[in-house]
Length: 135
Image (tube, rainbow, N blue to C red; front, side, top):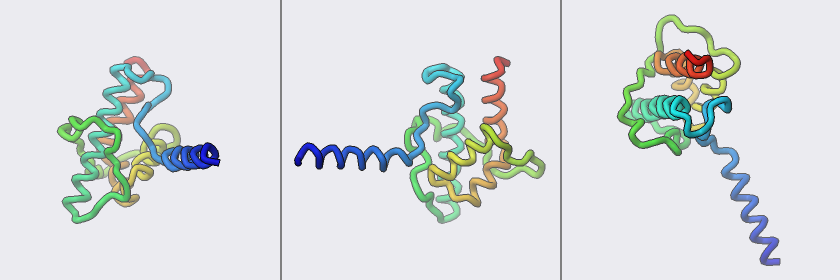
């Protein structure tokens, strides 16, 4: 009986953790440990740190911990998350995945919408496309 209870608790813990979005890989085409992958993760984390700072400056809090799993030094990287005047709409693929990750990590949708129109967001999309294209 004790073994079954332990298994149920372990499965419950794993299920609870399964909903969290860890930064393990920005793109499966780039292996973990690849310097390009590390730059993508670092720059994505810089966006999360900037989002948390913006929320705090506005007297708000994220609904989760957007920076969990991020390298702490990404907090020192500037990320311009202010919306630009003219930007492409969030398209399927990586831009949509990135937007969904922001919301899943606790960035409120209004801020995620602004960030998805920012220089930092589209620079990250371009950086990812460049890394995969070998440019």
